[in-house]
Image (tube, rainbow, N blue to C red; front, side):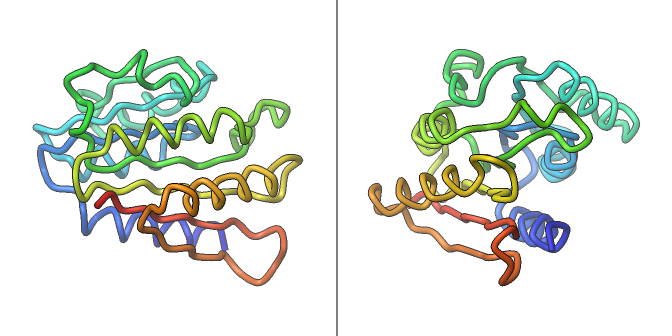
Length: 185
């Protein structure tokens, strides 16, 4: 079901992102969202990719090099909650799409995960960095320790802020990922 939600995120992003746009993958992971975003922004666009693990950024960079589009990528070794310290100030209010895949790096150290505190802070910041009609995709993996609590925090933030959003559940399983799709109005 995870693959279906990732495909759904990419389908939705393809309807929003235009050539020349600026995008952010706030959790680089294995680089698949960064690759997709980079393909969408075209030769004149840029994608910033943030991760706390240098391995994740190396995997991401290698993936884009293999696909011949690494020149569109700017990586940042940082926590997503500190995006304002690594992104160029000129991109504030200019980012078309921001993706989050919460949890841990697949095939990586499962003790290194996102958490509700940093994710909450990062989402506050991310919304501010979006351009009008930009989108925020938050894919919550709830099957790891802390994952359900993190998703609940995401859901509560969206409600408190009154953000225009949609929830797409992976399946009826309690362990299935949950997508929060947010549009800036």
